[in-house]
Structure formats: structure tokens, C-alpha cells
Length: 411
Image (tube, rainbow, N blue to C red; front, top):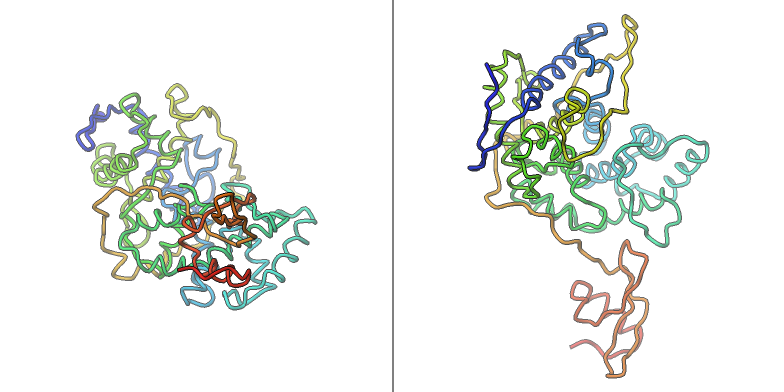
């Protein structure tokens, strides 16, 4: 059956291109490849030359190698106290390299917040780094902010972990009612833009710290927006309206079964319960299809200029290479709260960055007799001069400073 020429999302008519059907074909074949690998079948696992020769992640991000390491070795291994689970996630995400986390675990266990010592971890990683062994991931690295007292990137990464643990991030998570609100909290922190905020949300969704359904919320990243542009051409206006982009992803979730059937494709879902696609999975898959379309449909433009795929995939046939371990779904997904959708009734938006007073360095009095305080902001190199009216969130620190300097107590 021919593809629909138009799909309607929130009253907006989106005209489909050939990439629309490619999305469903890619999902079906990539999922089949993963299934064949896990069944122990030898290479090649597909006749699709692009999928055979280039690297693509799985349809379901939870089944990717990085997510599986996160679930098995970071989240579900060790103390299950929420503070310790959060600490291990932050520590892993700071470097996003399994070998680095394993090295820290080997020499600095138990990996709990109470046992944490930068004095132990930093020298260990610096020694490894000097030997030309990579400590940080090569992809999607979340560079820590330039804390001026921290001279190396390793120190800055560990400092970022400390900052997030010292602030009541865990307490903030306990107050959220909807999954998207976690995004609003994360984007107030200096080093968390949209992409890394969503990466952290995915990691948290594998834990018992928060319980939300897989289909509650997602944000379209740059690759996903580009993929939408390729699927819908000029009718997709590259809108920055996150809510509309989410509605497009929900359309795919709701209509995927019918589209697979229309194309005569088998798609058996995730795990023993054959879980269907969620908005998180669709977001992930559209981004991968954007990459696939560079070679499959080179004349169709997205929002990116890339025309090739760098990461090649080579496995010798009959070598036994490419096997993957059995997949484990997060234990936290068995919680009844994680099985009920709770879609936020309002749009989710990125919040303004919070500025945290790290230290009051001094003060000066202007010609009108008004005191301005010299402020060191957490995560920033430059200081600023601020009146007390700008320091509402640091009044205890201000009172302590004034007492030490012999200034009158604040009224």
C-alpha cells in the first residue's frame, strides 16, 4: 500500500517524503538485526548494505551497549540508596566511558557518596591520562564548566559531580509530578543544555529514584529535528516549538502498528513483553534515520549539512564477532508507577540557569554609601559586584560575611 501523502498532527498537515516509509523500514530491520545478534546468529545479519557497513544504535536506546552498562554496572550494582545511585550515575556520566568507571570502581570502592574522595579518584585518572589512555568518551562529551580553582578537566568533571550532589538535586527530583519537569530542573544547572539534560533523564528513568512511564515525555534533539525535516520536507517548518515536535513523536507512537502492517513489516517490540515504541524510542530512531538517509536518500535535505557517515562497521563473516550479551530491562520498570502514563497538561520549557553564590570575596561602598559585594559565582571565572537585593538566595552566607567583617546585622 502506498504511503499516506499527508499526516495531520495538531491540525497541521505534514506532507510525507520517501523518508517517512524509510523510518518504519529502518526500525523493523534494525530491530531484526539486534534480535539475530542476541540469538547468536553469525554475520551478516542483514542484506541492507548501509546497515551492514555503518554503525547505528538500536531502535530502543535502553538496549544499546552504553545503556546496558549503565543499568547492570552503575545503577543496579552496589548500594541502592537513592543518594548512592544518583552519585554513581553522575560519576559515570561525568566521563561517559565504561572503562573509566570500572577503573574507579576497582580502586575506590565502595562507590557511595559517603565514601567518595576526589583525593583518591583524581590522581588515579590523571595517571591513566598521562599514559595516553582515554579517560573521557569521544562522543557527546558533556564538558564541565571552567571552575577557576580546578586546573584540569578531570578535576572539573569531579567538581561538577560534587556540585550536583551538594545541591539538593535529589530532593528536587522527589517533588516532580511529571517526567518533563525533570528537564526543567536540569536545565537550570549551568552545564546541562537540552541534549545532556535528556541523556540524564533517560539514565534516571532506569532507576527507582523517579518513576515515570516511557511514553510520558521526550525532547527532539538536533538530529531528530533534521530527521523530521527529511520526512516532511517544507511542510515541516523546523519549528522550535518543543510541544509540536513532541506531538509529531506521539503520532508515530500511536500510528506505528498500522504503518508496519501497511508496509508488511514485522516489528515485535522490546523484550519478553514486546513493549511498543515510546516517544523516547521514536526520538532516538528518527535521529538515526536522519543519519541513514544521508546515504539512502542523499538528495533529501534535513536541517544539517552532513552528507556522509563516519563510523563504519566491519565484522568478518563466520568469525563470531559482533555478538551481544543478553539484554536486561531496568528492574525499576517493574514498579506499578512506571506502567502508567502521566502526560503533563502544560508545555515543558527550558528554565533559566540558576546562579549560585559560591563565595563572597569582599565588598566596597559606592559614593552614595551603598554596599556592593564582590561575588564568586559557582562555575564561573568572572566575579561581579552585587547589591544585597540580588543575593536573596544567599542571605545566610551574607549574614555570616557581614558578621565577620564587623558590619551591622541585616534588618
